[in-house]
Picture 1 (cartoon, rainbow, N blue to C red):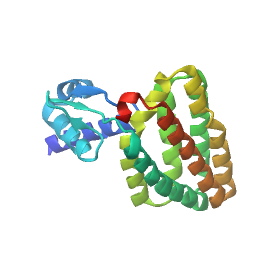
Picture 2: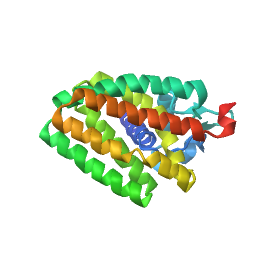
Picture 3: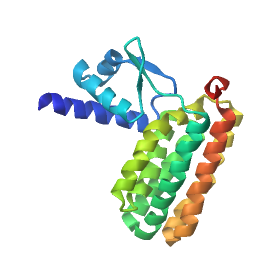
Picture 4: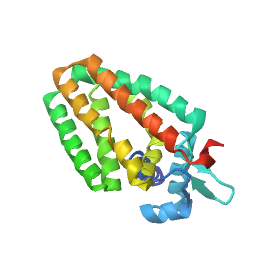
Length: 221
């Protein structure tokens, strides 16, 4: 039972790290290194990594290390196709169901996101971005859809790290979508499900275009 509990702790820690963009695409690390970072034994850490690998978040390498997959080309476009469907649906449902308390939390998350984006605080910005979006998706009252979105984000979130390793011009281009976040919150406040859905889809379309334009040439092959 103790081993199972430690595996769950390791899984939750690594899962959150992936969702908040603490790993970059192509980043390789050994299970021993992850075990040391988590302060959890090798066996439960390896089991957690295997579980995440089964969800496409890690891939094992021949030298006993694991790597965050590099997503580009058709795989990237396919991932975004699923995001348009699922995140658009969840956002529209959130506009119907969100409470004042939840809306207040979303607004607070957006304020943090805007501040961290302004100061280019990468880790804090990515964590705030995750909380902003998932505070909305959870308000959809569709737990299965939220779980499916999380599965996509486990693979997608490391790509966000690239924003803060890009040139200032490319960073500014990506962060130019920030005003759309305010439009989205306003649509949620008014219960305008159509506007909420078109806004999140516009945000996703802009993100996809950015990633396609800035993808490293090596990832396109």
